[in-house]
Length: 249
Image (tube, rainbow, N blue to C red; front, side):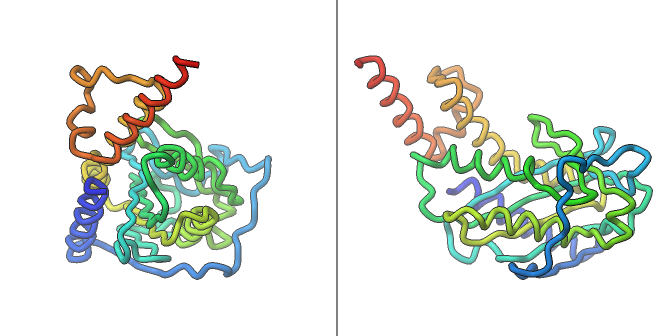
């Protein structure tokens, strides 16, 4: 999909630029390794227990998924952190960018939206002791908390990224997963949002087609996206066909 491929290329360029002037680390997650303990139903991080906040509404935040079917576009298992890692930020509230790059197979217009929704729901079900997703908004923002106890026992972005990679790979259509975290500055997080904007608009267009079954294309704010992405045009045809069939039964 061209929009996602463009976003991946721009993200690679962003990482390359940051490597010249920022604190950046890259680690590899090995599936099957030691797991972080589960939090369970009582996994609530109160204000008094917070060690680090990520993406507080007072700060910049963006979280998104970018997918591709092209081989070698995703560096499987790689976790890149641009900026200070969590243990180096005790007592701070950090701007937070998170991009999950996913290489997929059998991803077509007939299943694309539902599979995207399956992947999007992963963050809500991520159960890591001492890590709490505080809030998520419709603008692809994510606010989370890490407890002091978790920090004292070794919680890092490698733990968070590795857990995300393992969860994504539970889906049989996911072949490779890579995660990028950004905590350097609010401006860098805004840069990530700008890179992901075309993908976010594509997701919004899919949502409007499926959930609202809206086909007023001339006045639609996503008309330019649908015109550019062939998969969206096919989704539109599929939904229209279902509407017609249901109307004749």
